Image (tube, rainbow, N blue to C red; front, side, top):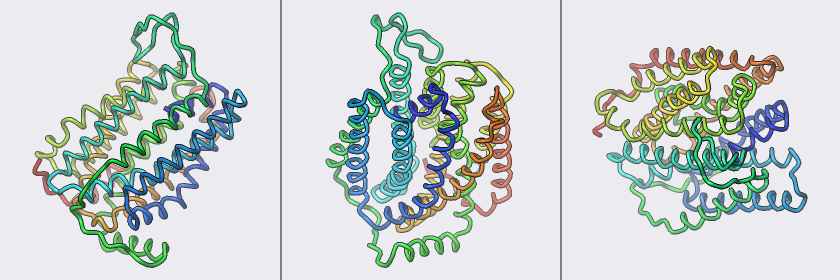
Length: 402
C-alpha cells in the first residue's frame, strides 16, 4: 500500500518532478546495492536474512510514522525515504526469495511453485490496491470506486494520512517476521559457505555468467518487460493517470488491481501452456505483446481501456516472470543464484536510470506528453523481442514436464 500511496501522494501535492528525482536517486543507489545484496544472499542463511529485513524495515517505518503522528504531517523528504527504503528492501528480498525457493524445492516442482508465488503475490497486490484506493481517496456517500464500479459500503471512511498508511505497513512487516520464524525446511540443494571477501565472491559470480553466456543473455533480455512495468508502476503511470486521463487516485490504485487480476489468471494456467511451447518462445511472444500494450496506451484515452490493457500487461509480465524464474532455476547453480540475479537486476537498473533521465525532462511532464514516454518504452520492448529472437537457438528450449 505504501508503494502505491507514495507516488500518488507526490502527484496530489504537485511534486512529481521531485518524486522523479527521488526515483532516479533510488535506482542509482540500487546500482551499488544490488551486487552486494546478491553476494549476501549467496553467503548467509536465507531465512535469517528475511527475519533481519522484516525487523529492521518494520522498525524504521514505525519510527517514521510516529514522527508523522507527533507532528501531524511528514515532510516530503521523509515520505521519499520510505520509498527508497522499501525499494532497496525489494532489491534483496526478491533475490533471497527465489534463491531460497530453489534451495528447498525439487526441480520437478519449479513451474508449480513459481506459479503459486505469482498468484499469492498478486492476491496481496489486489488487496493492497483495494486498500490504497480506500485509504487514499476515502469513500463518497458510502461508496467505493473499484475498476469503475461503485461498491456500496453503507458508511463513509475518511482518507488516511500518509503516515497512517506507513504505520499499517510497519505492522505487516512484524507479522511477516513471526510467520517466517515458524518456517521449518530441509534444503534439497547442497550449498557450501563461501569464504573470502565480498569483492572476490562477486568476481566468482561474474566469472560464472561469463562461462554461461546463454544464461547471461537470457537473464538480461527477459528482464525488459519487468523494466517497463517498474517504470509504469512507480513513475509513468502516475503522470499518465493525472495528466493524460485526468483522473483521480482511485484510478491509479485500481490499475494495480487490474494488473494483478491478469497476473493471477496467467499464474493459474501458465505451467500447462509451457507443456506445449518452450520458455524462450513464450517470452518472445509476451515481450512483443507488452510492447504493443505500451504503444496502444500512448494512442488512446480511455479509463476502461486503460484497466483492460493493464490486465493484459499483468498477464505478460507475470508470464515472463514465472517462465524466467523457472528457466533460471533449471540453468543456474544455487550457489551462484543470488549473484546472478543481482547482476541481471543491476543491468536492468542501468537501463532504467537512462530512461528516467530522459523521462525527467520537463517535456514529458507537460500537458499529456507522457504518452511519448509510453511510445519509447513500447519501442524498447519490440527491440528486446528482436534480440531474443536473435539469441533464440542458444537458449535451453527443452519443454517443461508440467
